[in-house]
Length: 330
Image (cartoon, rainbow, N blue to C red; front, top):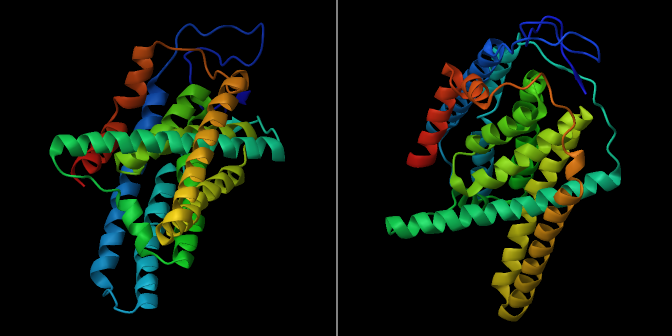
């Protein structure tokens, strides 16, 4: 269950905290609208500042010729997106009230591994959807659309991938898209929290290749954080997913391209593992479906009022317009 701070009036009446208390007569969505507007503005600032920071680094630091020097340059350019953007994001959200998290269930090793299996299976399912969509769009446009992330990873040395993709990105992203977000919207209900965590995280990736699995992972990571109250769990899962999606994938591709006979065997084995993981993910989600919903939050409002409060506000409209523009034109 989730408690609500006394200085955060979600309702026009008394906050319900147990049986026998007076039911509020009307749900006041104005605090909800203000909350999501401020969050949307914070994410707009984060995306814009992080992009401009990288652009400034590219313009100010000359690209070197040597391999080691190029990797150091790439690491500097990539990591330059975080410091100022993270600081401004934190300052915007610093004074926003938080919902007190009292659902702090410890996560066993078995449940953690099961969650990782679900994450891997869902990642492959989302990736297939993105690949099919981009293939279809490419056919319509008459030109293939490439995944910029794959091209970037192919150009980076393993140690650079480890620092940037496996370590730095999961830590920063889980703080921004899970902890700092969910600490401020958890009081509006779990469904709202899960959906918005997935949507905001998916849109922040800026392309359809990554959107679908990023959305699904955002939902799963949000559930883990709401259940445990510990962002370290989601950081660990995020690191494992990025490790498998970068190191393991590149290693398998290297094996497949070296020898035709061995490559065919590895490719068939990889496909079998992928389909097994997807099947296990679906099975586990269905089997444990009754444990997914932890709490309902404040009394329900109509879908129209919920939609208006969450999306029809200045901050979220700006964020949706910005990220949609990146999807379509970059």
